[in-house]
Length: 444
Image (cartoon, rainbow, N blue to C red; front, side):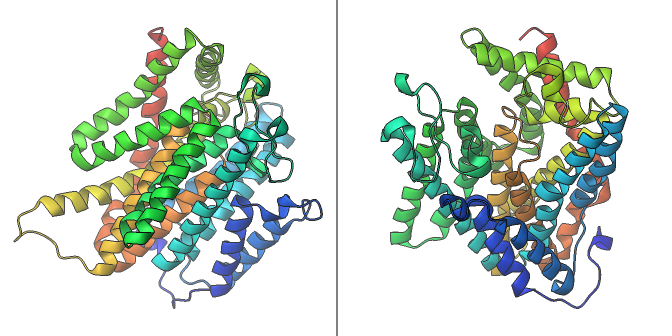
């Protein structure tokens, strides 16, 4: 793993981080889309290009981690899959999308967030964006035709029957995306609550309440389940042993499939979701090497998979899913291993405890927070197809940045970031697919 951290004179580019901050605010808050005069402006592209150039020019060292290589390897695979499935140009277009929504953001966030202070700034932007979304959604609940204060944002659903599922600007125009974002921000609010003084704790409790209110307003059952499951994951991780945790993780997809099956008896949409999952598995079995081609699930089945894992496996086959799922699982697994080290150290006898510096303790706390944010994606992503949403790679990049800082503080943590564990993660990710397939074959 050490080869991913080249020896070089250190240099933190203030310019790169400044434009990364502007990029983060632009993609999450989307202020330019609130006014007709600026709605067509391409400031998001400008900010990320400047941030990328400044990073290459002045940020040192530059790290390329296994997750970067895994996702980069998807590009030629997507193109090849497209041509083999008769949709070559679609494959090229989809590969370009990977650079814009995944590779560039992941590289920038993992390399530019070189301090906890920088991390706090971006976390605050995330929470501010979430609060604006909740407030806009609250306005949609009472406004005529469900209109929010943000330009051209309207609640969706059967308005005349009282169903008003909130939306926001840009790629947050789907209530499910809003819900996923709110769930991934819950650990951030708890983090700042624990770090805050008395008065600020009250503020953070208000932020946390707003996030749960926002989740309720999305009307997304998958999001609501995700929020509850995230709390369950916290107690499992912090209290269960590794073997019990692994067992629960392996059984979780089956449990989720059971829940979806029970809903299908009374809900046509849930029944359609199960059918889409099974269709995705059949696509994988029929095209195990290259899948049916990225972007073709909707064309083949008529609906998206409503499951990020099944969607990738069906479209990109065994190699593609192993790379995408491996990058995701490796990021979460390493975070979990660091948390287990911390728990075991706390349980050790006083004579065996490892003394940690304040800097290391703070970074460990932040790593735990980012781990649960990533778990928020993994849970909610089981019920919607958001495998290449920008949110995933923003939060994954933040997590990798924390891992890099931990290794810099204490090189012993590098033992959790070996290529061997990365390759195992590419196998572990198949637990989800196998579990869903078993549950579906049992007729659930």
